[in-house]
Image (cartoon, rainbow, N blue to C red; front, side, top):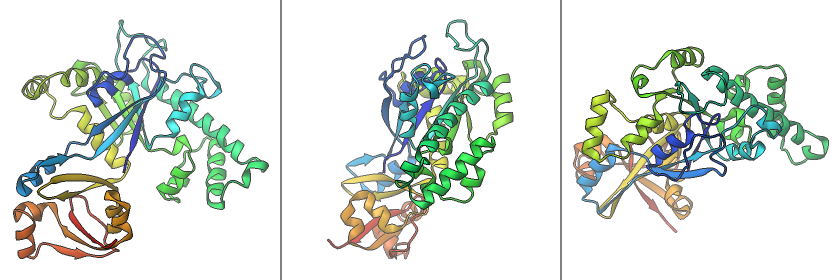
Length: 357
C-alpha cells in the first residue's frame, strides 16, 4: 500500500530543502527565487522501524525490507492560485493526488532568502494556502453539482458535496463531515480541504529545540496535535553526515530525533496506518495497512491471491516473537494463534498466511 504526502506552502518557505532532506537526495532543486519547483518531485522514503532489525536477527534473515512512504514536493502557491495566479491550478491538481498534506510554514527571518510577503507571519501564510484550496474546492463542487454533471455523482457523494458547499458558503469548518462520514468516503470526494494535514514550522538552527515567537503564535492558534517544529536546513545537513557524525551533531545541537522520523510518525498517525511484519530466513519485511484492517486485506498487500484464497493467519505479537526467540518457541509456548477472516490485524503483528489458490 503506497501513501503520498504532499509538501505545500508559499514560495521560498523551505519545501524543496525539506524534501531533499527527507529523501536524502538533491532531486528537488532548491534556489532563492519563487516557482523554482515547477513539476512535482516525488521521493520514496523507507520508514525507519527498529523492530525490523530485531526480527531479522532472530529469523537470521538474508534481507530486511522497510515499508515506504512517498513525499511529493509541490510548487509554491500564491494568493490567487485558484484563479490561475502564479502557476495556478496546475499545482492545485497535484495536491489532489496525495493522501495527506504537509503545510510548510515559514517561521524564520532571513535577509538572504527572499520572502514573497513583506513580513514573516505563519498564520497569514497558512490562511492564504487554505483559502486557495477552499476556493478550488468551491469551483470543483459547483461544477459537479451542475445539472448536467449530477448524473455522474452517486447519492452519498452528492450529499457530501452539498454539505461541503454549505460549509464553505457559511465559512464553517468541515467537522460536520469528518464526524459523520468515514475517511474513505471523504477521500473519494477529492476535496482538498478534507485531506489530513500536518503543519511543519520551518525554523532556523537556534529555534529548533524550543521554537520562537512565530511558532508559539502559530501553535497557540492551531494546536500541538498536528504541528511539528523542524529546521529543513539542519535536516539537510544531518543527511550529509555518516552515522557517527550524525549522532555527534544531533547531540551537539540537542536533537533527540530527526525531523524525518517525527514527520513519518505524524504521517502514520493522521493517515491512521499500522505496520505488520513477515519474517523468515529469506527476508524480514514491514507492510503498511490501514488501522482496523482485516487479516485477508492485510494478506492482499502481499499478493491479491493471498486475499482471495485466505484460510488462516498464523499470528504472533512482536513482543512475544522477541521474548520467545522466533516462530518455533512461540508456537511451543502457546503464543502463536490461528486467526480467521474477521481478525483485525494489530500494529506489530508477525504474520504467516495460509491460503489456497
